[in-house]
Image (cartoon, rainbow, N blue to C red; front, side, top):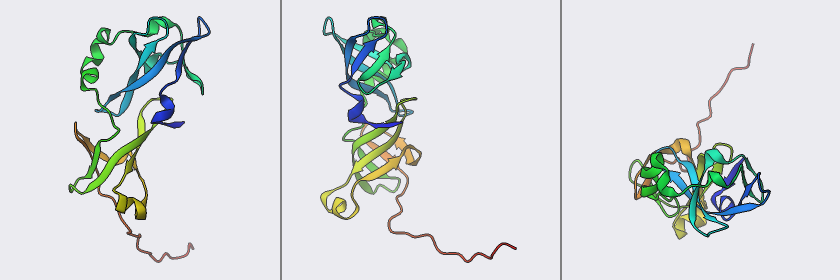
Length: 174
C-alpha cells in the first residue's frame, strides 16, 4: 500500500513485548542510490535520546504506528556501521529541484509516496511554478522515470506535454 511521506512520520513505535509505545518516529533515513527508506530517526520514550529504527525490524504497520519486537531493535546511529555513509548524506527529498535530461526545469519535490511493505519510494510529487501549476497542476513522477539523483537535483526523463498518440487503422480480426 502506498502512503504519503507525512503519514509515515510522527507515529508511535510499539513493542510486542511490552504492549505499549516505546518511541516516536521523527524523520526517515533515505538512501538516494535506490530511493529506499532504510530506517527512521526516533525519539526514545524513556530517555528522549535519538535512536534509529531500521525498516527491516518493523514487523507490522498499523494506523497508530509501527510494531516491533522489543525496545532492543532501536539503536544509536553510530552503531550502524553499514549505514554510516547514508546517514552522513542526510538526504532529503522535499525541496529538491527536478529537471529533465535536457535541463528543462520541472519544479520542486513537494511530497513522495512509499510502498509500506518494502519501504521503496515509488512516486515523487513535483510542485511547479505558479503559472505552470494553474494550467497543469502537480506532477506525479514514477520511480522508473528517474534517471539520476544528485545532492541538488533529480534528473528525470522528458515529459510528454499535450502529445497524443497517432490513431492507427486496424483491420478486423478474421
